[in-house]
Amino acid sequence: DAGVTQSPTHLIKTRGQQVTLRCSPKSGHDTVSWYQQALGQGPQFIFQYYEEEERQRGNFPDRFSGHQFPNYSSELNVNALLLGDSALYLCASSFNTYTEAFFGQGTRLTVV
Amino acid sequence: DQQVKQNSPSLSVQEGRISILNCDYTNSMFDYFLWYKKYPAEGPTFLISISSIKDKNEDGRFTVFLNKSAKHLSLHIVPSQPGDSAVYFCAASQLINTGNQFYFGTGTSLTVIP
Image (cartoon, rainbow over all chains, first blue to last red; front, side, top):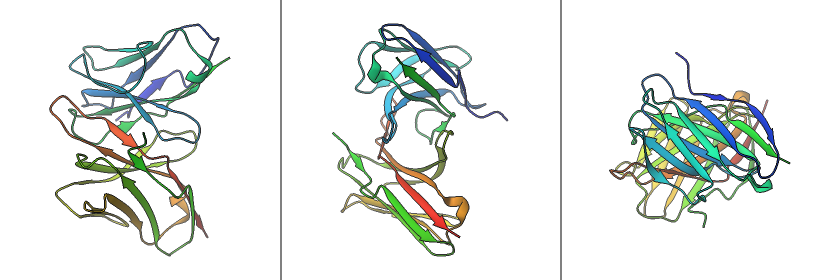
């Protein structure tokens, strides 16, 4: 049983560019959440998708957007990249919105 | 505004002894708490959780204690093993009908010395 898978694992982008990160949830899970983890910090909640809708959103600007597909997989898009967007981006899935979340290995984004 | 705090960035414990990791929170509406373990280059791994209606939950060597009046939770690992060396994050959530978001602490790096 595959767990949460994220792609790519590493990414280098130039300031001002756009990036798309992808996540496949654990089998049987229908809820996907995205987190940003800066160096030395805990994960910070970006948003959560359930039934293809954004259900919850953290304190992130509109440059951060997402999507959930009918197969429950999800994408995180970040526009107009800033140097401060460099971080580990974690995807977490759960069965409905109320249970513990299982995390992928993350995508390390570096903005230069 | 850090709603979940882990004030000890690191902890070292001898193998076989007890490890106690602490976490404080400020939002009294939180009703679900979790601990995650993270190894380098991996995503956080769920360890144990506790609902606010309980004050203790045990799973093998891991026990989580919740003190709602003090807004404090702790994770006890007994006995500690070298493989437990990792960064431990506590997280808290308020379960509402539109979903939930987890608020994470900054982590405590545990080193278990053989």
